Length: 320
Image (cartoon, rainbow, N blue to C red; front, side, top):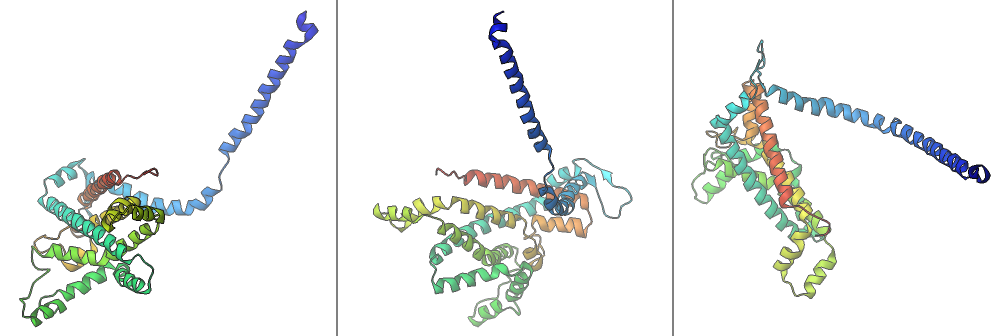
C-alpha cells in the first residue's frame, strides 16, 4: 500500500533498470572498439613480413638445424638432439676460439671505452681545431673492415710493408706482426681499436653534451678539482651512455669476423681464431650446418648473458 502511494519502489526499479540498461549500452561500443581493426597494421605489414622472412625465420631455422647432424648435400639429416652441443663441449677448437674471442672482446672494449672517453673529454669543445681532429678520429669508422684489414695487412708485411721499412730505416729488426703466435692477436686488437675509437668518442661527446652545466658549477663552488669533477660528476651523469657504448662495442667484438679473416684467416696456428671464424669454417667450408648452428646459438647465449650483466652493472634510475 505504501509502495502504491509513494511509488518509491517502482521508481527505484525503473531507475535501476534504466541505469543497468544504460551501462550495458555504454559497454557494448567499448567492446566493439576493442575489436575494431587497426589500420596501423597495414602500414607495418611490409616491414613485419620482411622481418619475419629474413630475420625471424632464419633464426628459428638455425635452432632447428642445431638439433640435427645437418650436412649440406646429404641424403638424410640425422636427428641428434643436443649432440652438437655435447660435441662442442669436447671440441678443443671451440674452447680455443672462445678464449680468443673473450681476450679480443675484453681488451678491445676496455681500451675503446677508456680511450674514447678521454678523447671525448679533450675534444668536447666546439672549436674549429677540435672539429678537424674529431673528423680525423672518426674517418676510419666509416671505412669497411675488409678495406681496413687489407691496408694494415700490407703495411705490417715484414718484407714490403711500410712499417717494416721504417724499422729497417732506424736499424731495428724486422717484426712479423701477423705471423707470430704471440703478436698476431694484439696486432689485430690494436687495428680494431684504431678503427673504432672515433665511434666511441662521438658517443661519449653526445653524452657529455647532456650533462647539466649546473652540476659543474656546483662542483666549482665546492672546490672540486678536475679529477674529482670527472669521477663524481661526469661519469655518474653519463651512465646511460656508458651502458650503450659498452654493450654495442661488446656485441661488435663478439661478432668480429671480417678483420680477422682478412688479416690472419684465424692463424697462425689458430692464434686469432674467433667463434665467428670457427662458425664460418664449419658451416661454409666444411658444410656442417648443424654444428655451425649450435655454435651460433652458444654465441647468442653468451652475448645475452654478458649484456644482462652490463645492464646490471650500469643500471640507471632517473633519481640517481
